[in-house]
Amino acid sequence: MKLSIRKKIFLTMFIVSIIPVSLLTYFATKNQYTTLDNQIVKSGENSIEYMHDKTETMLKEYSEKFYELEVDQEFKDDILAWCSDGEDFDYTTQWRMITVLRYWMNINWEINSIEIHNIVNGQVLDVKRTGAHLYDQGRGYDVWGDRDESLQTNTAFSSDGDEMLIMHQMNRFETRTPLVVIVIRAKYSAFESLLEDMKTDAREAVFLFNDKDEMIATALDHPQTQLTNQIQELFKDIKARPNESNVFEKDGIYIFGRSVSKDKLYVIRAIPEDIVRAATTQTLRTGIMFGVLGLAVASIMSFILSLIISKPIVALANTMQGLVVDDYSKQEDIKREDEIGLLQNSLHYMMERNQELINREYKSKLEMHKAQINALQAQINPHFLYNTLQVIGGMTLKNKTKDIYAMTIALSDIMRYSLSFSSEMVRLKEELRYLESYILIQNQRFENRIHVNVDIEDEFKNYKIPKLILQPIIENSFEHGLKNRAGDWRIDVTCQEANDNDILIVIGDNGSGIEEDKLQELKSVLENSDSVWDSKEHIGLKNINKRIKLIYGEDYGIRISSEIAKGTIVEILVKEVLD
Image (cartoon, rainbow, N blue to C red; front, side):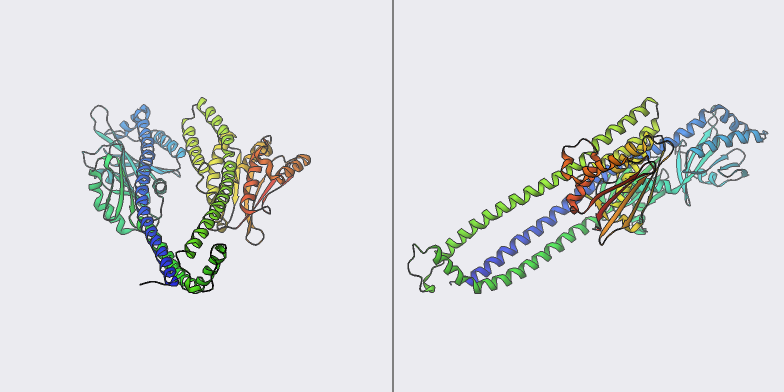
């Protein structure tokens, strides 16, 4: 049975529309599920190793504190005197011990109090920041007394309400007879913050167990009783697995476990499988929506085209073949193999060429635009890295090991943030977090003279702005406005609504200001947006100005005002972008 042109067009467009959409939806969903699954496993493995190292470092710090007491001969002698029968615990001895413990508390804000429980006579010396007390039968000794004899006594962890207990048993050297138990009561929030660093999604959870298989700390964005109960029930199975197989999936949960310092602590990260399913479900829904829309459009267009296209096709074919075909008076005599075939081939070639040219031109401009933004963003990094490495080098010569570690972590966060080109736009609160790490490094460089006051309402912090636009301006203040100024350096960062759909970020300093001729020269340089590629001066400011104009247009960018001996104000005008 022969089909009319109208029916053939309808069926062809229908089939061509439904098959690619269906296949694309299927393979996109399957590929995304596999990709997310692999990403979750890889991310989980990396984060559990990171958490292991962080927890190991924390545990080592407390172990070293206990070791310092063990080798402090005066402190050990005071303990022996206190634990000896018939010896009075005089005020001088107490004060020496209290002084040592308070020194610990003063250098570690996480510590609320330190208790020493005398196993021999049952007395407890409780040292707080506000005072110290000696009384009988303290709280911490009962917690320690429940420990099995097979467990180690060097460093042990437990929890008590909103406090974490870090405990250590001190013995008589000659006989290994237990003398006292030292209990550090630390803030629970410090451990919770440590666990929060592992999470990448609000639905995830991180747990910390001690060597008695007790859950002593968790990181949950909201109550997840069922998930917590599942982890507690599975913990023995998790702990029994060797470290090389510390990743597995059970009961719809991806579980990542890692022991710390020979099972003194155990860290577990739990990721519900719903995170993967939710992402693939969204892809499937989107595919179905576009599929239905495509079918509806194809059906309507096929019906319309089948009515109106057949006559113009024949007329157009007659025009194109006019020199060859002489008689076109009867439309019904025209065969599809002749006219429509030629028309389809001609139109197909023309459309293909047009699309190729358009795509080539569009992609070329798009790649050029992206390359400009990435190159401008990358200009900042070498200059800042050079200054930071100089500071770290100076600290190395002075053997400031702990400061070097903090500087290295801050530099790592900064480089990870600034060298990521996955997105040109970030939320203002992310830019402010990056600024905190930057200020930490610069305070080491400028001897803690920098005071940055950020006064921005929460509603503005969720707006998106171009990445890396605050740090170069503040760096410019250090190098030009504040460097030669005595005393403390103050920088104020505020944000306010400007015109409709615009926000104004204002950065002001109390530096020496800019002379009028230099200020006018700087304004002139900023107005010439093309100079950013070849200029060797004011790289940071021109970089920001160029990027803002590339993104929002010529009406946006940087404005600068300054007064000698009073300071400089830099205003950044951008659009309000929430998503």
